[in-house]
Length: 209
Length: 129
Image 1 (cartoon, rainbow over the protein chains, first blue to last red):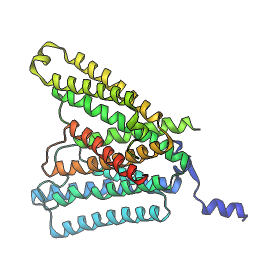
Image 2 (image 1 turned 135 degrees about the vertical axis):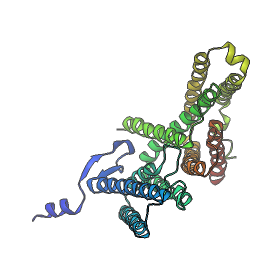
Image 3 (image 1 turned 90 degrees about the vertical axis):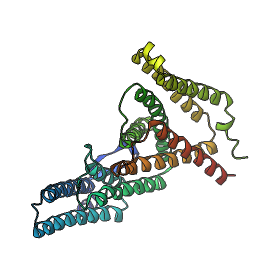
C-alpha cells in the first residue's frame, strides 16, 4: 500500500464542494452520512412519540409498551448526540449547522397540534427542538470565527442582503396582513432570513471566484 | 468619535433611506384604514409597498458599499449580531407559540432586526474607539 493510498483512506473524500460558503464549506461523504442519520434519528423519534401519544390518549398503552417506546426514543437521542459529538470533535461546523437545522425542521410542527398533545410529554417535547437549534446557532458562530478574510467578507455581504430583504419583507407583509392575509408563525420569518442569507452566500461567493 | 462613522455621516443616504421607510410606513398605516381598503384595490396597495421596499433595500446596500474599512467592520459585526439575535428568537418563538403565545406580528420581527443591529453598532463602535 503506498503513502497516497493511506492518505486517501484516512482523509475523508469530499463528495462535493459547497462553493457558496467559500473553500471551508465542503461536505465530506462521512459528514453527509452523519447529517442524514441525525435527520433520520429525529424523524424516527418524532414518529415514536406520535405513536406512543396516540396509544396513550386512547388508553391502549401498557407499561411495557411505554418502556419500549422510551427505550427507542432514548436510543434515537443517543444516536443523534453521538453523531453531533463526532462532527464537533472534527471541528466540522458546517455539517453541525446543517444537521442542527434539519433536526429542528424534523421536529417543527406544520400542523397546529403539538406532537404529544394531551400527554405528560407535551411541554418537554415542545422545548426539546431548541437543543438542535442552539447547536446550529453555536456552529454558525464558530464558522464565522474561523473564517478567513475573504469568507468573512462574503458572509457579511450575505448577512447585509438577508437583513435588508427580511426587513422589507416584514414591512410588506404587515400591509398584506392588514389586507386580510393570516398572521404567520415566526418560523416562516426564520425561513426568510435563512433563505435570503443562503442566496446571498451563493451570489457573493460567485463574485469572488 | 467612533460613532461618527461614514454610515452615520452619509446624510444623503440616510435621508433617502428614512424617506422611503416613512413612505412604506405611511402606506402600511393607510392600508389598515377601512376608507382606503374600500376605495383602492388591494393589488394596487401591494404594488405600492413592493415599489417602496425595493428602493429601501437598494439604498441600504448603496450606503454599505460606500463605507471605509473600519466602518465596514463595525457594520458587519453588528449585522452578524442582528442575524444571530433574530434567527435565535425566530427559532425559539414557535415553541412558545406551542405553549399558547400568539404569533409575532411582522412589525415586531422588523423591530427585533433593527434594534439588535442598533445595539451592535453601539457596542462594536465602542470597541474600536
